[in-house]
Length: 190
Length: 198
Image (cartoon, rainbow over all chains, first blue to last red; front, side):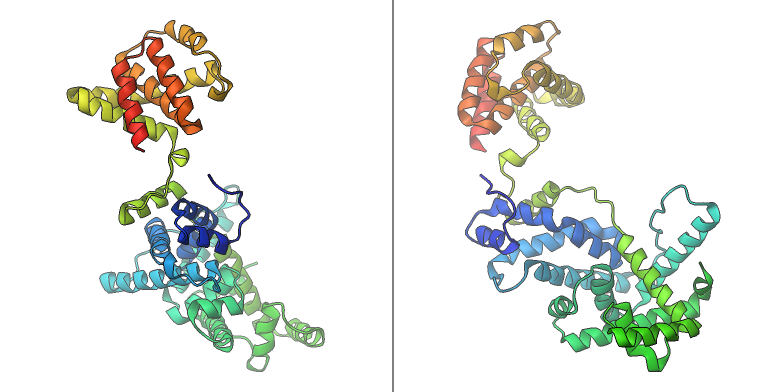
């Protein structure tokens, strides 16, 4: 029933567009980890699973209008970042302030002092990322955490490449200043 | 914030895109400038931390596809991709619901144990259905264990679904064998009909 894997994303999309809906599973399997990681790092930590399925649902529903000249990954990130932004906006309106985030788990076997420093640093980083203006955050996450190129980031966010570069540099400046102001100890850590 | 005059080089350096000539000059600056060194270290640390952040997902790809199926009414999961256990539970439960609705709770309570026994039995006695090991041998081995009505239903559902995943011809043969070895004909036919609807 399935053709051998190794088909390009756009080949798979074409098959789905032709009515072979079960092929969508291949795209879900290919991008599940990547997109869930992006949603998580974007700050929608507690709602990753819900948002992940919404991203794929939206992609599936709009697959008919997918332009084969696009790159599927770019298009999926585009949907993901839109849904994350909408979600964070709605959350901000609901709560007015951010709840305290649970730090990411740290590998066992690290001495307690280092562990405490790491936890504190992770909490501060999450706080900084939550406070970072969205226009910087989108670029910063896509480039620094997702390892996407300037070109792909520009396509996802409908920006020019110089604009992406400018926002990335501003994001870097912003986060350095945030740490200098809120957690200067980090600069003395080993 | 890195030194203002060096800001462009600072970013290019971070992106690994600084030309060799400028690279040497910038590295010489880094030796002297504590602020730029600290900022660089911080940004690298943040990058590593961000990249290492990964969620623990409870939902499988199948769960996501089910969500889409529910929302759109489209069929994205074919029977060959559905889990044998889930199908066995769903289909045998339908049978109980229709024939013995008051026994549903008992059936569900015993399902896990019965499923485990049915699947272990199938794995141990009939390693691969496609190898056509005579069912007589398998049935004989199974007959040494006490059979309960609920167990029989699970066995029937499990075997028919497993053979259906191979081919519908295999399923028909399996159905005949099950009836031949005294599994309730009505149950076999009910489950057979449900599977043909899928």
